[in-house]
Image 1 (tube, rainbow, N blue to C red):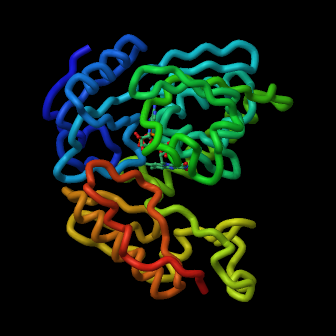
Image 2 (cartoon, rainbow, N blue to C red):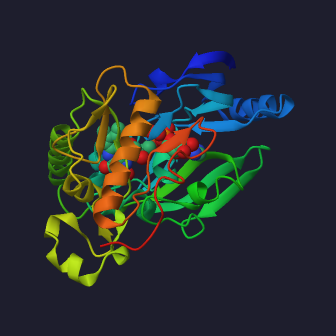
Image 3 (cartoon, rainbow, N blue to C red):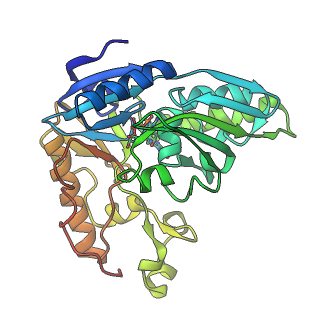
Length: 326
Ligand SMILES: Cc1cc2nc3c(=O)[nH]c(=O)nc-3n(C[C@H](O)[C@H](O)[C@H](O)COP(=O)(O)OP(=O)(O)OC[C@H]3O[C@@H](n4cnc5c(N)ncnc54)[C@H](O)[C@@H]3O)c2cc1C
């Protein structure tokens, strides 16, 4: 395995934005992962972990230290038990599970990125989350020490997991995941049809030609809004616990807004794209603008879901105070 220097990270992200990694490597095997950790330790380098780069915004100045791209993609399916490397494509795993007539992952069809990234942010769609199907996660800390996490210990909830919440305290790599799916009671083609319908829907919502990182902000907790406000909301804009960030952004009038090469899509106001040669700064300015507009309209501060890498400080930390909303 080669550890390279000064590698542009643009092509490792779906947004196509970002400066270089000081050091960079892709790890496929455990021995490569351990070599990478050793290199970081010997050279006193901070470690940043990436999967498919579909939920990250990388600073224009790049990322200091060692960026490890996880490419461990082995997969064994026996009955309804799956043991998969964190670097495997989530969508590929969904397809394999559907072909084997296993149930539980099909709602996640078409989500870009790897299993590791999906575990980190508890990837979800159409009411299903990957965390629901997890039995165990194998994690290596930056000293190369192996730790196993049961489903409960993973602390999955909306858009998060213990790996995200405690990243500062326990830096490391999600390496392998064990999932237990349900044995399908319906016909395999029914699941395949559902998968294809979801992919077709997603292709309209997130046209594959667009460079994006998916939804920029997470949904807002329903508890931040008054019962009166909630009762007036259209059904599509809310679930029991959340109000769609896309709805709030659209109501705040930011759909279609463009700053530099970064643009908010008209049909989905939580969908930010690199419409040309956007810089990370363009995206940050656009997101700050959108966040402020929502705050002015609803008194709620949206939290960014996209992970920022290489920034000295969180550019959203002080944009607007956190108070309860409309
Ligand atoms: C068009 C589009 C549509 C999307 N739709 C959805 C959707 O419907 N639902 C949804 O949940 N998400 C969606 N996303 C966001 C994204 O695809 C998911 O969050 C995905 O799970 C991220 O995986 P990744 O491998 O690309 O992670 P990356 O973007 O590479 O990383 C994201 C975070 O995970 C961490 N990470 C990644 N791999 C590991 C690892 N092995 N060990 C430790 N940490 C790791 C990184 O450090 C980073 O903090 C969408 C994105 C796009 C571009």
